[in-house]
Image 1 (tube, rainbow, N blue to C red):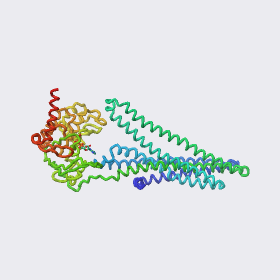
Image 2: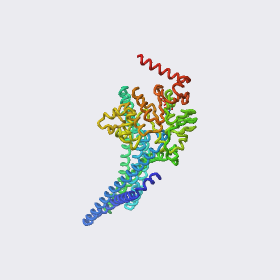
Image 3: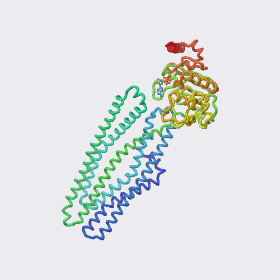
Image 4: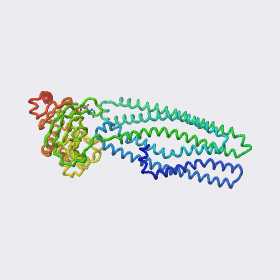
Length: 576
Ligand SMILES: Nc1ncnc2c1ncn2[C@@H]1O[C@H](COP(=O)(O)OP(=O)(O)OP(=O)(O)O)[C@@H](O)[C@H]1O
């Protein structure tokens, strides 16, 4: 609750008006049966003057109630939408500040659900709170007192009705809450299945998986239908149960005061008013029950958002250190690394040095830890033991800005953002000029295809960059990586979708255009790193070889084996 109060502070005045207007609306609802009673009494007495006067008051009070309700909705919606937007933005900002490990811990999909679905639940909770919080006690207590004042003899009917309704509400709303919780999970599951299927549509179609996918989807969809039927059935019982209690209470009231109507006709008017108050008491209990159901769901969402906001970025930067131009020397010193939550280490005792401007090849079998190793350079993770240094400074003591400016990471799976080619390139250098873009595109062998577009660098990049081929995406991604002239460039298998000739041209261009840049090239194929100043050979997270290609071919058994196998494969391919 403290969490919601904190976000509500900004909307104090709107909340005040929401409460005032709901109090007016509830007051009007309480006053109407009393006035109706008076109108009926005037009718019974044949006092037409009084009928007109009271009738007019009745309409006026009803209109005031309606206006109060409308104003309440306007202010409640304003507060709920505003608070939801504030929480969403704060949460989003927090996520942007997360370390890579933080995001992995939650998972990207889970964070998206929290940012959308959970925030909507909180918005609904606030809205309901502002519409019902004051209304329920005022309506309940007010109607209770007025009903007893109207027909004191029938106090016990109200008590019995309240007990019965609380009993039925308790039984049904508790169960309903559980069903709604389950339903929410099913909705999430259906969304995930549909998203997964549509995003992987090429795989589904090429492996003719449509039938399997339909089966998977319909199983969950059918479970959802069954639960919906159970919820529908529960409603089908609850609503008549409430109606039954109400009708029995009305019949009992009429039965017990009916004989008084002959002697005192005004009792008829009193019964009408009494029944009205009983209905309002019933409504207050039902709304209260529903509110508690929704509140428990909303509070779960509050907890899930609080969890994000309470998460601290486990990577602390020494931003007190000056922002410096790094030269690009990289040193690993007895580095061990274990992924968060894993029992076994992925990297063991890694030590090597890369001098500024050198090209370092990282080779090894699949899963040997190549990507994990280079992820420690831009501090996507911190080592579990040992140190990673840049320019002889422990990364933990490097200012974040210096590090971001110095290191550029190009992934194998190129990720581009919707917008234009220029927008994507500017992510690598905010103020990149057309000349900068042309140079970067030339290095990445992307200039040729970009310049074929009528809009050249303003050509659109569609959602998930679906309008580019795999090779084009990689080229654009390399261009983005080199545009800022980084001191350290990491190419994590980032030329895998390029043909051999283009790959060679990229490497040559990097050699001449980014001479001072320390480049880490991760490659499955030794041929891709044959010219590297130093090659690091990894096996099961350990360095099993280090040196130039010539040195390794001459002295390193492990390297020789990989090299011979790859060469044999190439030769077989050529012969074929
Ligand atoms: N985010 C992660 N969380 C937990 N374990 C991971 C994570 N990423 C990788 N691993 C594990 O760490 C090991 C090394 O993976 P890594 O991606 O570094 O290997 P790699 O040599 O780059 O492989 P490849 O050439 O196939 O890309 C693998 O066993 C992998 O399952």
